[in-house]
Length: 266
Length: 147
Image (cartoon, rainbow over all chains, first blue to last red):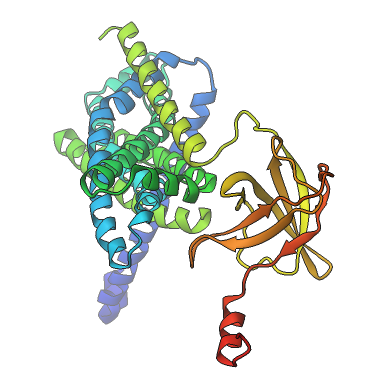
C-alpha cells in the first residue's frame, strides 16, 4: 500500500491507523455488549445455582462492609465540617442536615460506594477470572459441558445487583450519622434541627434516584471487571493488565455515567 | 467458611442493608407504607406562585397534610390537598399560602373557623389567601402606596 501511494504514504498511514483504532474500539464495545447480554441470558436459563450467588454476595457485600462503613463515616464527617464552614458564612448552619443528607443520598453515596467496591471486589473479580482463564480452568469447565459464563460471570453480576444498592443505602445512613456526630456533638448544632430539616428537605425522588444510580453502577462494575478478567491476555502479565484496566475502566465509567444519570434522573 | 456460615453472614448483610434502605425511605423520604389515611379537599387560589405538590399543610404549626396536586381551573389555581382523617375543618376555615422564613419553602396554613358545619371529603375551602408577592410589595413601597 505504501509503495503505491508514494509521497502520501505517511498521511495514509495515519488515517488507516485512526480507522483501525476506531474499528477496534467499536468491535470491543460490541463484544462487551454481547458478553453482558449473554451473561444476563444465562442467569435466566437453568440450571439455577443460588448458592453461587449467595457466595458472591458474601464476597462483594459482606466483605466490603468494613471499608464502606469507614469511608462513609469519614465522608459524612468531612461533609459536615466543610458544609458548616460554608453555611456559617451566610448564617444558615441550620441547613447542615439537608446539605449533608442530599449530597450523600444523591451523589456521594452511590458514586463513592461503587468506586470503593470497584477497587476492592472488582479487581479481585478480574484477577480471579483471569487466572482461571490462563490456567485453563475455564477450558476445563467447557470440556465438562459447564457453561463458564453461567458459572463464573452471571452469579457475580446478580450478586452485584443485590449487594451494591444495599451497601449504598448503608453508606448513606452511616454518612448521615457521621455528619450528625460532627454537626451536633462537635459544632454544637441542635440535634432536632439537623434531623428535622433533613426530613423536611429530602424527598422520595432523591432516594429513588440514588438507588437507581447504584443499580446502574452495580451492573457497570461487575460487567466490566468480569469482561476484563474473562478476556485477559497471556500469562501473569495479562492478568495484571486485565486487573488494572478493569479498575480504571469501571472508575471512568462510574464517573461519566454519574454525570449522565444525574442529568437524566433529577 | 462452611455454606451455613456464608448464608448466615449474607442474611445479616441483607438485613442491615434493608434496614438502612427502610430508614432512608420511611424516615427521610416520607414514604407512607401503612397508608396513614387521609381525605381530599380542594381550595381555589388567585395565585399559587412557589407552591409545589408535596408541600406541607400546617394548622397551628403542626403538619396535618400535604398538597396532592395543583391544576389550573379557569383563571384560578385549584389546589388539591390531602388532610389527615383526624383533622376536621369547619366550613369557614381559611387557607393561606405562607413562606417558611424569608426565602424558605411555601406551605399552606389552615386556620380553623367558627362554624359548626365541617367540610366533607371532596369539598372546597372558600376562604383563601394567595402568597404575598414580595416584588409587588416592594413596588408599592417604592411608589409610596404602602402607608
